[in-house]
Image (tube, rainbow, N blue to C red; front, side):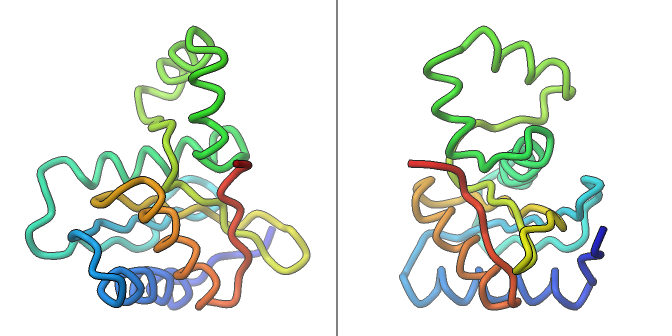
Length: 145
């Protein structure tokens, strides 16, 4: 397993926030987890609302727990709500099944972590996560449309 370095995780955070500022998004929280689910880097912009960290973390942790982007988890929640509710319980409530949780993969497709972003619309959160991941030289996997 390739490691996600602290420098790369911090670059993901910085680039995601730079993308958000360039697009005039609402204040964001960005959480980067390594492949084990451990928090590697985190930032909250000024004026983010309460509990945004938990939402960003839940998007990333859910993506890692299932090995799929949180956009796909959102579709699963619509199609199989009882399963997603049970899975949420199984992972201690730390699963947010909406877009904004993106898997981080190497060019060869190896999973090295996940990014969760919260603060704007879910689509904008996901776009910021993708921008951060790509700026750090990785491929993002947000899940299917």
